[in-house]
View 1 (cartoon, rainbow, N blue to C red):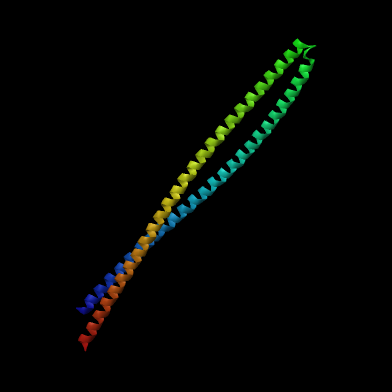
View 2: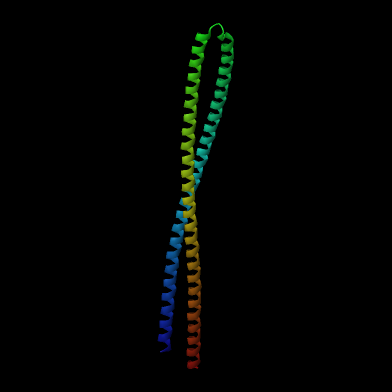
Length: 189
């Protein structure tokens, strides 16, 4: 009778141990999968950061172009002021002719300034929208990473709990087995 109980207890202990090992294996596989997913998300985040850096370089380039255009604009204005001064000197003798030339130069300058201003506003708006979109994508990826890290922590806690439970169960069965063995040995004597 004691031998049957001992065998039954031993079989239950092996079955529980095997079930716990299978469950721990499944949780480890889920943990590995989540780690791979986290790695992919981190790579995407690095890629987005690279894109953001690229856009920053592009913005810096555009700002440099804006500065260059502003400098050209200043040169054009200076040039036009100089031409205007020279024309004013000639104005007394050639009033009508100079008035027409001055009027044409002002129209060209105004057209150039309007075109440059429109291009600058359009480029700046487009790049600001793109930077805003990239920042939003970056925030979403960071939220995903934080969520996955929370899941990983939870799975690690479950694994630890199952390992502790398994260890306690095995210790209990080993203690019971030892007590039965001692009882059986004392009954033989």
